[in-house]
Image 1 (cartoon, rainbow, N blue to C red):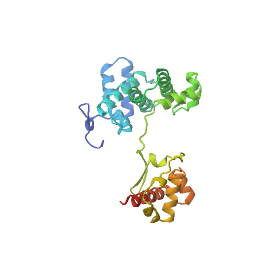
Image 2 (cartoon, rainbow, N blue to C red; image 1 turned 180 degrees about the vertical axis):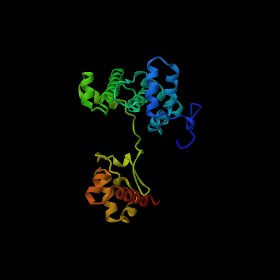
Image 3 (tube, one colour; image 1 turned 90 degrees about the vertical axis):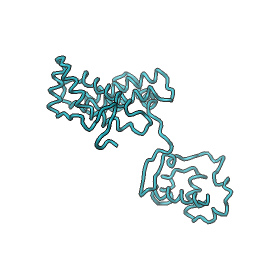
Image 4 (cartoon, rainbow, N blue to C red; image 1 turned 45 degrees about the horizontal axis):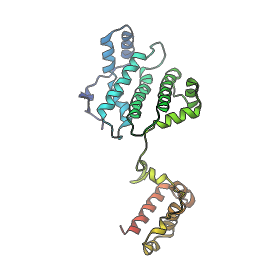
Length: 255
């Protein structure tokens, strides 16, 4: 998708300049002295970095132009707040800043309602994470973020989890030779009140299934086991379980 020419916000990304580390360092120093031209050159020379970051957020139905503009805001904040005295590459500091800006945008525009207090905690946690990443030159753990904010680990975890985008049940998690496993395939059902097999009217078709196929359907839909649990039980891979399960259902439906 991003190979060769990509036009975002009217910008032909294939023509964006690429700065070397020495050039970035020099421009950052000049920017600190108030050189506006150096600042503009630094922004332009790091737009490819913004582009690479927003690729992580594609496939969510968001407008790429919007994400690119939000990412540029994160880039500008990085330039204005970067400490040139620290022995850290600018990109190491800028990437989490850009990611944080995009995540805040997605969080604030999410259709899922989250209380303002939890949103504020998540916002401060993301800020603390960005600061600690720059200071430690690595991603901090939850305990370090909680200590920086003076909060419990549980509060930080709840806040951060509240702004995570929901995942579709049909999100692919694994593919083996064309047999894709979706999130839905990983979900078990412990509710035995309505057994799927008991409601199937095609009893004659069920009899035509192999012993292994019947066992898989029984474990999956009567016992509520996940495909991983079934694979451990009968000693085959999860991909094989998925393939046999789908094949058995197709036979029952007469497909």
